[in-house]
Image (cartoon, rainbow, N blue to C red; front, side):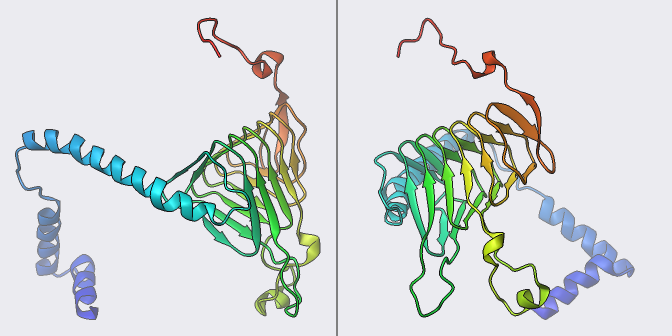
Length: 255
């Protein structure tokens, strides 16, 4: 293994003409494609896609979803998991409503409420309402309670930071001690909230119903309902108009 690594390093970095020529030849060979006729692959490609879709659906229905439901306080009847099962760690009680869509590349963690090793830990509580969407690589760290209201949308790579996991004091942090109680807080996302990609919500924050938080924002203080907010720290940019908040219906569509 070391010999192969050193050979690769020599080929890439040596000024020796042999190394330079060999590296160019190797790159050419690795990038060269076998001249296969593409006609059969126009038939194979949709078959492969269909087989992949069927396999993924079976795994979702027969494996990931039932496994995940065993971790929930009350398993919902309608739940859509995609790309696997969310990672769960720590003492955490999870309640999920109906018709939620959750990426398997998400993380749910719960903080130990009772730091006394002689006593049983008290579960943190994550409550997710109905028709909630949580996208990929989102982390929800529950300090005590995190509540997510109905119809909320959380885009990819968001972080609901109910607790930091480490203390402020550098000496305590170096010794692996846990965060302190004053660093922990509840997080509430009311109904119809939309968090853009890579948003961070800090402890003690409530985001009012219908509010939209722009991409990359860091929410350090509570936000009122019916606004668009963005920035670091997140600030209200404008209020949503009545037309934006009114449900419009197509006359040709019946309920």
